[in-house]
Amino acid sequence: MGARNTIRIDLSSPAPAYRQIADAIRAQLAAGDLKPGRQLPTVRQLAIDLAVHHNTVAEAYRLLSEEGWLDLRRRRGAMVVERATPNASARERGALSRRLRGLIAEMQTAGLPLDAIRAEFDSITHRLATRKGK
Image (tube, rainbow, N blue to C red):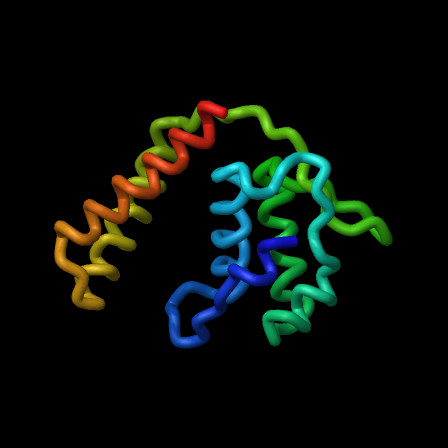
């Protein structure tokens, strides 16, 4: 899986490691880099690759399963599944908006100017829109 090579854990981040793992895999799923039917590495293998406890990876996989991205089966691992596009409630949209504002504030605190943040956001949304059109 490509995820092993692109997931980076920042132990100094306020975000827990399981959340960082789930966010990295979710980004690949949303971008279409991980297609339905794709087998993810075992919990233990990804934990070894990332140098984290296996429960950390298991929690990330459980979270993605609850969101409808993965099918988890004992002894068969995690498989990417076809996921219907959910219709986020106003409450969920508000929570996501707060997370985005927090991330933007974190980027500014790290010294990124708003123009650079906007350019990155535009680049990411453009890539996602292009992939969705395929």
